[in-house]
Image 1 (tube, rainbow, N blue to C red):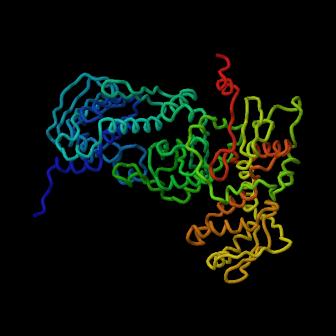
Image 2: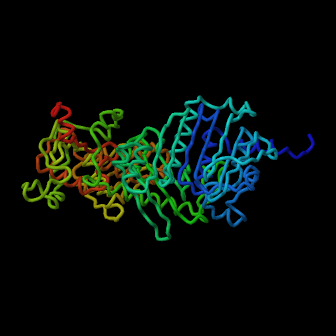
Image 3: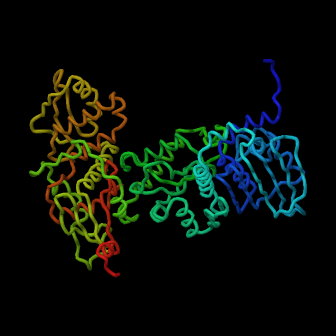
Amino acid sequence: MAIRVLPPQLINQIAAGEVVERPASVVKELVENALDAAARSVAVDAERGGLRLLRVRDDGHGIDGGELSLALSRHATSKIAQLEDLERVTTLGFRGEALPSISAVSRLALTSRTRGGQCAWQITTDGGETAFDLRPAPHPEGTTVEVRDLFYNTPARRKFLRSEKTEFRHIETLLKRLALARFAVRFSLQHNRRTVFDLRPATDTAAVQQRLAAVLGEEFAERALAVERVAADGMRLSGWVAPPNYSRSQADLQFFYVNGRWVRDKLVSAAVRQAYRDLMYHGRQPVFVLYLELDPALVDVNAHPAKLEVRFREAGRVHDFLFRELERVLADAKPGTVPSPPARTWMAAEPPRPQPASALSHRPAALPLKVAESLQGYADLYGTRPAPEEEDDPPLGFALAHLHGAFILAENRHGLIVVDAHAAHERILYEQLKGQYRAGTVPSQPLLLPLRLKVTPAEAELAAEMAERLAAVGIELDRAGPDSVLVRALPALLGDIDGERLIRDLLADFHQHGQSNRALEQLDAVLATMACHGSVRANRKLTVPEMNTLLRAMEATERSGQCNHGRPTWVELSLQDLNRLFLRGR
């Protein structure tokens, strides 16, 4: 075929394939234009999932009548004028593709009146770039865009759309994302002439809480941890993250904004996952609303046709900043600083998955670990239960009983606390081991008689490769032959543990990763396994002083709300919950 210049309508229809994927894509582009026009109120009406009608009305600064035809022309925009502007984009839209692309696959009417303008003007089109019909029209200050019969002239595109209900759900999700980007703007949504939501402007703390509750639920609004961090170079992170025990099976409540723009970014996801790495139960997803602000010149917002992804000029620095600050926020969430996980949350959650033998090797006889000795340091610091008049009840209260050799029952001013003793002690030891390792001071306890273990040749070779790194966490061992290793010392903090089981489990964990280098990068997993072996086991009866010592240690330990596997370490049943269980007060 000969080379030819494509007609304008076909060019716009091809461009629409990148910009207009579904009705929600139209809403995104039109609402972003409204926000760029400094709108204080945005109303979206949809019919039949947006296929029959999409109407977006705003009270922004409007478009002059003489520029309406330009607004429907390709690559026409008021938001950039030169290449340097593209390197410091501060608006949500900027490429001048949205309106012509939308008009190419729909019947579009654009009505606008500038602020202070004498009258409004309307322009209509059904896909042609030059056949515009311009006329005066009644309209308040602002702009209304009506999009009817989406994809009427490209029926192949309609075949790929989902049901009306599904398409509308995408519109609703999209508008809620935008509502979290502009709290001071009113957002309303109607579908088939029924009001779905009307989010009033949120200009104070209570109103912000209401908007968060409307989008993410009441429990998130009540329990979310506030984030407000500023780096030395001016990079700023703010927003809210849910505590680890408020999680989802899907990543459907994760909102991240870069300079006000909602984005999906692998770097961001990796940083958040790393911050939650030993707090989240297997397979669960964190919930958060986070805002990153940085110099626009340091982020490329033109990396995706629909502007859903960005590129950071200094990606490593951004990742480290996000990870470090989120880790600190989560670490600071100790008992008494945030509400406890409601018991009903865990009653309704999926049952815990079976743990490997290394994590659940409970033995009915007395265990090697001397719990009272290992917790003596905490007892020296915090003591046991004081007289009631000496001080107010601490967040986790005081121990009442040790139930079935596994759970501590405690009473505080609010009601009843139930603690998984093994999980709680595991977290305490884990945080201690991490602190000692980072300080380079993990003390070793030499064994009276070195422990010789028979292992596979592959495990013996791996043990030799790992010897130096294991020494850094208090484990001294040597390869003693083709299929044996000699253990000379173990971490002193773990006390009199089963050294053979610990070493075999560590070698198995390393082997499972496929290569020792990858295992070395996951040192926290090594420390977690060590802490699991060193913590108090089920059926080891604890005394009241020991239980109170453990409670005080939990209150002083970072991340003590979850064990190293992400399971909760404690729940609270308030007096109101207890009264409800027994039908009291009715």
